[in-house]
Amino acid sequence: MTTAAFYPVGTPGQPWGETERTQWRALQSRQRRYDEDVLPRIEALSERFEKVAYGRLDYAGERYTLYALRNRDWNAALPAALVTGGVHGYETSGVTGALGFLEERAAEYAGKVNLLVAPCVSPWGYERINRWNHDAIDPNRNFRADGPAHESTTLIELVAPLRGQFLLHIDLHETTDSDASEFSPALAARDGKVYEPELVPDGFYLVDDRENPQPAFQQAIIAAVERVTHIAPPDDKGEIIGSPVVARGVIEYPLAEYGLCAGVTGARYTTTTEVYPDSPRTSPQQCNEAQIAAVCAALDYALAHA
Image (tube, rainbow, N blue to C red):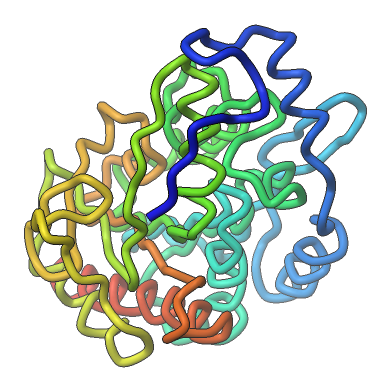
């Protein structure tokens, strides 16, 4: 648990304006490179998958092309599955897990499902290891067609022509210690609210859709991931990150109401993974393997129950 009485941007109790956003932005520095880490892997995968440029970002002269990969032999008679990663750019295994799935396991599903994978939805956040985009906006609370985050609206535009085809959408995330030490305090400061200290759960968990719960589907993923890394227990209130645990390792959010990525397709089966990379009980490799195991378990269950 981390407490924070002061955030270095803004005046306590007052929401940020453009001055504060500019001050916050000045504190962010590029710590890794989208064009060096992510794009070469996408380019290598384009030998087997169709590379789709579905949007472009321009932040103060820094330009990013957003890419997805999809089956070259897309067959409208088959169900479709969307895999997204890097909606929060700092959550590393979301990006590497999506790419790792394509590199290592996607071939197993050829002829069974149409795959569409957007591995790094928020490249500016990826480079700054930040939850927000350049405008201090959380893409994963703004998946609305008229929303303010271009990362979100371009993904909505990508999937819109395929709505009705999606059986599955799995969105790959992490919960990190920096959620409590940096990002939640920043959110409270930005919105002029008091920061409430939080407990970061130690282990993997899932977020189901409260409006379309699929408990057996979620538990199939939990069972697969447990072979790779540990599952987060509830806290002494029976909660994970302030939400009641509805089944082992599972909480629920109303995806569409909250503007979350996992709600963009209207798929029957949806989930958000949450890996905990800061645990002494796991490693970056295990986090990647957990994300890949989650994708495969989700696909296996959805296809078996289509």
